[in-house]
Image: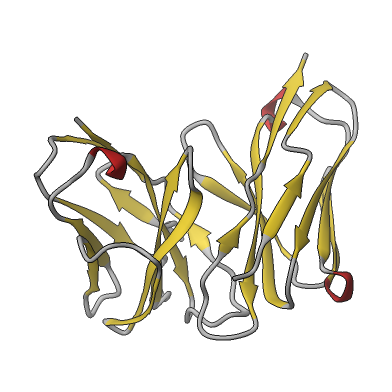
Length: 110
Length: 114
């Protein structure tokens, strides 16, 4: 099956710093989403981005489907950005079945 | 618009028991998927339902089952619980469960098997 790898696995930042999280996938995909998992476990939607670039406030994401990767940019990080970030993809066949990466654990210190 | 609602939020069960978890999707969404999250295996797909039919199933034993009702609410059941079933169970809702539609998740049910 498709493999989804995220890097780095862990990231520690000072408040105000910028960061880039990467998601590589091993096959063509029809759908890619980025999530932030809060301390209570809920997955919060950040971006639905099968291709192209999107921005939402301090966050932006770019997916280059032909090269099988996606990037999540966090600028001017805040302590509330701490948590685990997941990318998830859906293959080009069948119905929606999200395949998740292993996540990037981000800690932003004041 | 209300989000995806999962109940209960927390459960403690004993080995050998069975458990039923509930998920109410976003109004108008007809597809519900279930995922299991454990520290060792990460987030894994369990199954997906649309119009009361299971369309897709992950690689889990038959002890894991589910169903969907005519109002799109879904339940999943785990029978003969094992310690390894302790996990966060997440439900996702999407408009039609097609590959190119966005999925939205509930807050999860944290199951502990003792």
